[in-house]
Length: 238
Ligand SMILES: Nc1ncnc2c1ncn2[C@@H]1O[C@H](COP(=O)(O)OP(=O)(O)O)[C@@H](O)[C@H]1O
Ligand SMILES: [Mg+2]
Image 1 (tube, rainbow, N blue to C red):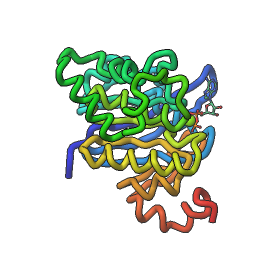
Image 2: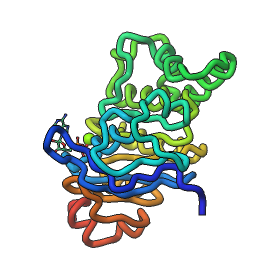
Image 3: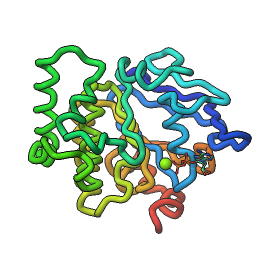
Image 4: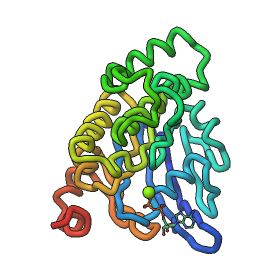
C-alpha cells in the first residue's frame, strides 16, 4: 500500500463557541484521488481551511508527510508540496492569465522551467492559452476555475486540494472541470476533491468520505459508495 500523505485525526474546528467540525478522521494516500462529499454547511470548507492553516484547530491533528502541520501557514505548505484551490477560486482578477500562472510559481526560482511549466498548463487548458494576455477578471467562472487549478499546479504540488471546483458552473463546464481533475490525477498528482456534486465526484474518485454536520458519517471505495442505497438515497437524489 502506498504511503499516507495527509492524515487528519480527531480534527475539531470552531467559530467562536460553535463547533463546525467535531472530530473528523480521514487520510489521503500517495497517488489517490479522494473525495470529501457532503451538503452545504457540512463543514467541508472549514476542514480544508484547517488543513491549510487558515483556521486554527480546536482539537486533533493534521499530519502531512508523517509530520504534524498544525499551525503551519499556506506558504510553508505550498513549499512542501501541498497546494489548495479555495472555494470561489481566488484568482487575481486584475492580472492577466499568464501573470496569475507566474504567481503560482512564487516559491520557485527555476525561471526556464517555470516558462516550460506554463506551456504545460496551456497544454492541459488550451482555453487559457487563447486568453493568456487577458485579465483574469474578464473570464467566465469555469475559465477562472481552470486558471485557479493551473495556478496551483505551477507550484508542482504533490497533493492538490480542490474545494468545490464545480460550484456555480454550467453543466458543460462541470464536465470539463471533472475531466481536468481526472487528467491532473492521471499525471501523478494526488488529489483531495471536496464536492457537493457527490455523484460526479464519486465517479472519478478512488475513495470517498461523506461529511454531515461536522462529522464523517460514511466512507469507502468510491465505486461501492456509488452503488450503496444509503448513499444514493441521501446524496444522489434517488
Ligand atoms: N466564518 C464563519 N463564521 C461562523 N460560522 C461559519 C463560518 N464559516 C462557516 N460557518 C459555519 O460552519 C458550518 C460549516 O461550514 P462550511 O465549512 O463552509 O461547510 P461546507 O463547506 O461543507 O458547505 C456551517 O454551519 C457554517 O454556517
Ligand atoms: Mg464549502
